[in-house]
Image (cartoon, rainbow, N blue to C red; front, side, top):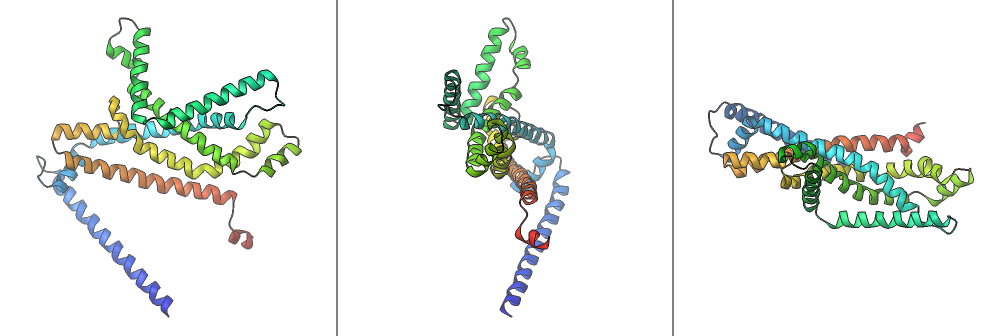
Length: 298
């Protein structure tokens, strides 16, 4: 009886919440339609937010597009580099290796640890400045007599931003994959060797598939963090969402409504992407590891 009453109260509560959200959504749509037709920006902050969302839609869309392009491409390419870095970390020199191979492995392992330490120990904003201005100086030296515009056509802001995200993602995801590799049972590695697998085959066919699957939630989190983290790239003038926000605020002198719109857009991106990607991850993990109920049904 008590359980039934609790369930009934639970349904009433969430029904009331859904009704409230629906009423709020209808009211916001009504206000948006009213404000969008005004000849100039209204005084109220909420109305100003709705007005800016409509009047500056091209800038918002462009900023979101640049943010997503740098985040998704940077995370994807960074993941590919992270796989290589994780492989280097797992292949430490042993006494069974020939002496030249030991030296190569030691050098590669040292460089990998140094790279991860430097990238994880310095702010992304500082890295972006070093990459952009350092690359610009190199290109300027390679193109004597070229104007700033000509150099920027070769060494673009997007290239600098993408490289920054790639380097960051590679360093962080390398540590994520290292944890995923360590989570694979040692017995499976030994079983692969007993079946005649080479070290490369055991890693690519046994260890890495499981390590990547175990690391999927952390990889998704890295992509979400990159969507928010690209906001620091405005320091070099890259036209992502934060740069668009700053430009709109400087043009309209309505700072609070502009940054509130940016907060809403970032929140919407993160929530929607997190929900969709986590559903895909759950499906992938469930497909490879069906639950007890599925086994019982079978």
